[in-house]
Image (cartoon, rainbow, N blue to C red; front, side, top):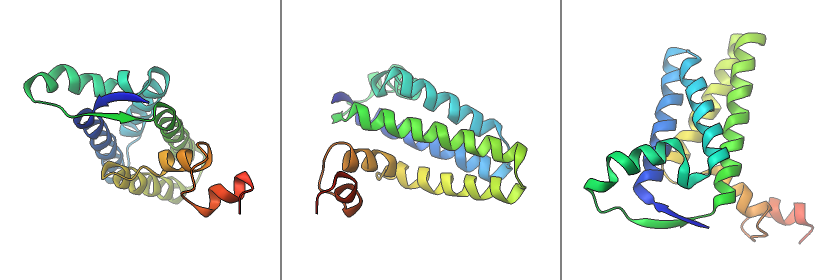
Length: 147
């Protein structure tokens, strides 16, 4: 667990969702490439040193009284890796699949990122459910062999 500013993490989630929605609206790969880069750097550096978190901490946090919260470092790294994989699939679909496949993958990713921006990151929850031995869902119990 690491302690980070809640507002910094929210800024990161909103920014990523905005980039993906921009890609959905424009059909451009540039926002997807930006998201891939940001998520890859965030996965490599960790949530406390993620580029958008650092940007917010340097520019905005000194002017406000940020709320510090604990976040599972490993679940966030897993979520960023899943986001990178989604970005790679979207980029590959753009070049090698029919446009409708690209659009469907982008639509799914935009939906998941929008939901994550409002507080429910499905990849982080999946990590906590399956890997952290939480009793949060039936899927995790089946994978671990618990009934």
